[in-house]
View 1 (tube, helix red, strand yellow):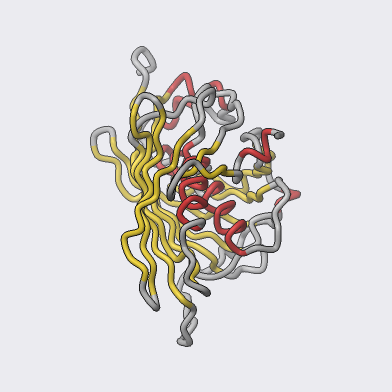
View 2: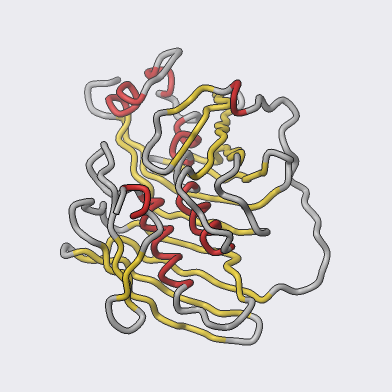
Length: 273
């Protein structure tokens, strides 16, 4: 199995339990978006009510995952209703739980379709944005970053093979959703200037120690995660060592497909200030 094939692939491992593997990421631990995506896939495998699609997920990161060890996903079927199904997933390795995720699924219902979020008017296309050497399964381009006002926008898409199944694309979007919230939080940090005018990954890691704490995604409509999506995120608060960012996810045509939120831990490494 190739590294990219591991991202959304799960094997059954008992009743309502599944096992997933991780590619070997260069930062030495499992990417949080992978554990979120695989947890969501595990939950999806237990939803057998026809027409129920994921509409939200909420996750707590507990421990960093070891990419050299498989992850076991244990699913609890909290509710099976006519309109909604609810699942809880605990992701475990030998050292204990590494993530706890809750997600909800709903049957489509007729109703209004209103969005008050607007696609930025000054967005550059992906081909005119700066390529980011981000990681496995991802093509990412930094479209805009500023500190006044604090904002972080990237174009991103999933590069692995995806079927036409909507669930595959929802899970791939979940994988992508952990890609830039911490960068958005740091744009508001008082010590952001330590990164210099053209920050690279080495400078970022030498200046800050950062870790995701909790993460949420609201899925508004079906999505093609293998086509360009704009993640438009802004920070809201840094208090002590915790920061919060939220943002919108748009298609290249400007349609709102999801909203994301993340709280993260940000510490300035000793000796940098």
